Image (tube, rainbow, N blue to C red; front, side):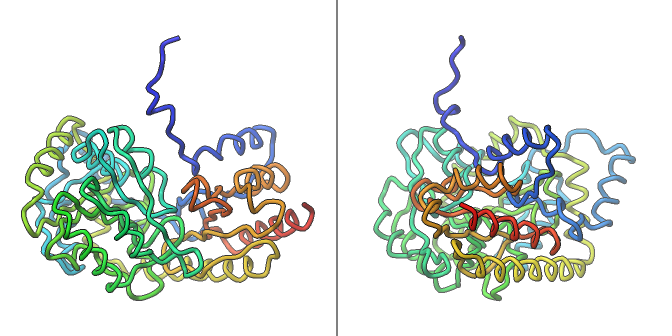
Length: 398
C-alpha cells in the first residue's frame, strides 16, 4: 500500500465528519434535522439575494467563463477595498487578494508565513482549520483561552502568557465561531499592545461574520492597529448568503511596512493556483455595489431564531448556554451527568435515536471545547422547536 502523508492523515474536520453517519441514516430513509453546519441558505427565508444571483448568471451567459487575474478581478478588489475603508482603515485595492473562500486564504497565508517549528496562537475553541492547516507546514497551533463562564470573552492574560518570539501569527475570530463572542475595541487594543512587542508576529482577523453582530460594538481589527500588521479575512459566504460560491478575500493592513516579503510570497502562491471563480466574483461585486437594505431583514430573521434557540436551551435540564453576541451559532455546555464527559458520543447517540445532527465541541478544541456541542440556530422556528423537543426528550430518557 502506498503510504499517505502522516500530516494529512491527522487532520480532522468535525463539522463535516459527523455528516458521514447522518448520510448512512438518510440512505435508510430517515429524515435528519441538521443543525450542524453554518450554511445559511440551507434554511428557509435566508436565500441569496436575487440581484447577486442575476449578476452571476448574467456573467455566465455573457461568456465570462475564462480565467481572471490571480489576485481577483480589479473591479472586485476595488469594491472590497472601498468596503474595508468604510470600516475605518486605509485599505488599498493592491493589498486585496480574492480567494476560493476564507479557507483558501488561510492555506495561502500559512504557506507564505510558517516554517517548521513556528507557532500560531488561536482561540480555544476555534474553527477547525486553524488547527489543521498550520501542521501541513510543520507549525504548531497553540490555543489561548476564551472564558466559558463569561460569554466566552478572550482571556487577554492567557495571550500575554503564551506569547514569545516563536509565535508568527495570532488569530482573532470576531465574531467568534463557534462561541458567538464579539470582542470590544478595548479588548482588541489590549491584544494589539501585546503583539506589537513581537516584531515577527502578525494578526489574522477572521471577520467573516462581521455583519451579524448583535452587540453593536463589533469593529474592524485593522482599524484599531497603527503598529501591528493585520490580515483581514472576509467573503461572500455568511453575511451575503452565498457559501457555495466559494469567494473570500484577504486584505493586508501593513502600517509599518513589515509584510513586504510575506506579500511577495502570497502573490507567488496565488499565481500558482490560477484564480478564483470569475462569474462568482461578479455575483459578489453586485452584492458590494448594489443596495444592501435586504441585509436588515436577513439579520432580523437570524436574531429572531437566535432568541428561540436561547430560550429553548435555557429551559432544558442538562444543558447550559452563554448568550451570544454575533454569528449564528451557540456553543452549549452539557451538564447532564451521563454525557458531560463525552460530547462526541452524545452527538452520535442523539443522531441515532432522535435524528438531530449537531457537532461535538471537542471537534473545535479537544481540551477547551470538550463537554460542549455546537448548534446552528438558522432553521425555521418549527424545525428549531422540533429539534429542541427531540433533544429534551433524549436527555430525559438517558
